[in-house]
Image (cartoon, rainbow, N blue to C red; front, side, top):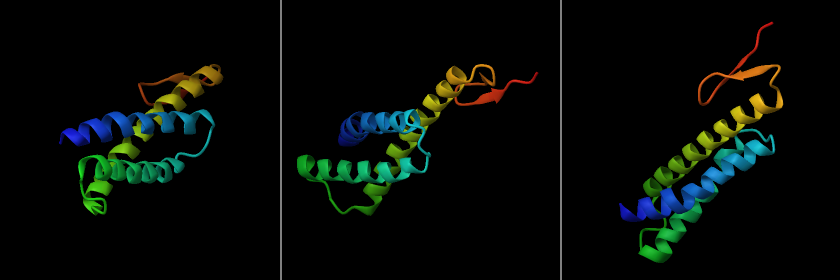
Length: 106
């Protein structure tokens, strides 16, 4: 459990958050988060294997780690995208909650 918190949430989770922000900043589609999340999940499993002797080919561990990292990336992506939309198009959109925007009516 401690390795999950340290490696997955802190180390790989930070990378996942930066990945989501980078994908949103370059206006790339959100499906790319899944690809990068699976790569981060693989790296996460390898680090746990190399440093803490956990199973490298654990499908359950890989899926849980990858799902957590993809979720963190999607949240960061959405927060950044909302910020972009309301900053770059203030005449069209206004913030409507933390992870959404609404179209302004005239």
